[in-house]
Length: 110
Ligand SMILES: NC(=O)c1ccc[n+]([C@@H]2O[C@H](COP(=O)([O-])OP(=O)(O)OC[C@H]3O[C@@H](n4cnc5c(N)ncnc54)[C@H](O)[C@@H]3O)[C@@H](O)[C@H]2O)c1
Image (spheres, protein in one colour):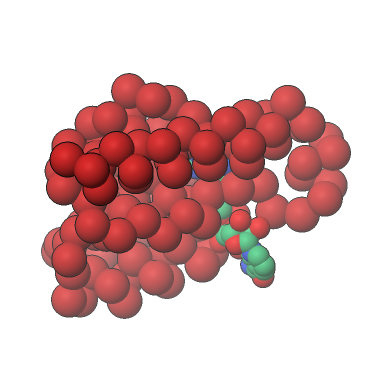
């Protein structure tokens, strides 16, 4: 299967990407701070995309790759991160998630 993992560079997402890439094609979308380490660990069946889930152009590019499954893990962890930067938190969690659902539905109907 072709699987998109948002937040695939994070704690949970990177473990998932490593495991799923053994049997599936995985695309990870993340801000990419840990990609350098991950690229050394995961070498096949994986594409690392640097970007934000609230960027519609990046989502369009990714969904052209015939994504079949979306695992949505991108987000700011914990209350403090959200309270320290509420605008980013709303952009990611509300707008970004809404866009992701919209693009998934469009992809499903084509
Ligand atoms: N770790 C836990 O114990 C736990 C428990 C319950 C729920 N969760 C939830 O699971 C998800 C993943 O948790 P984690 O521990 O892997 O967190 P993490 O912080 O390690 O990973 C989140 C990743 O999302 C990326 N990210 C954040 N906003 C983004 C955006 N707008 N666009 C693209 N990438 C973005 C970050 O760069 C980061 O790599 C989070 O939503 C978290 O709230 C985690």
